[in-house]
Structure formats: structure tokens, C-alpha cells
Image (tube, rainbow, N blue to C red; front, side):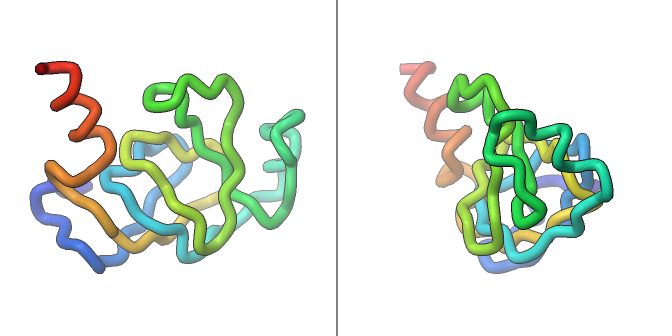
Length: 106
């Protein structure tokens, strides 16, 4: 675990199941586990998708499937797979969660 302040745009990070994605980025790859399909019940279960709990940010009640190249929102939680690799695209005050906090504070 590292501080998000140490992450620069363009760096690659690993996130493991149960962890919160620290920055906005794009999914590079993921490692599926044998029992992922049952965790996605009704949410486009697919061996080609990792799933993220984005409820804190979007209110979406079900895990959201993502494939390589898809945008990942910082603050979402990885709920399937063994791990993902992502490329940081927005960090600090430029990240979606930071912008939401700034709007609420106004």
C-alpha cells in the first residue's frame, strides 16, 4: 500500500480483490478466479470482465463489469478476479472522487 500522493499519471498499479482503487485510470489486465461468474449475478457475468463496486460514487447497486481498456473510477472497490493492473490517468484533485468532494464542500 502506498500513498496516493506518490502516484503519478502514467504509472501502473496493481489492485487486489477487496481493495479500493486509489486513482482514476484504465484497466490494463486482470486475473480472473475460477468462481467469479457467480459474484456478478445479473450484471453481465463474463469471464472477460473484472467487476467493481462503484456504489459509493455512482449509486449503482450491482458490481459493474469492466474489460481491458475500460475506465476505472478511483474510490471503487474490486470485487472479482485475483488482481488487476491499471494505468493512472487522473490523480489528486483531478480525480473524480476529489471533484465530487469539492462540489459538496461548496
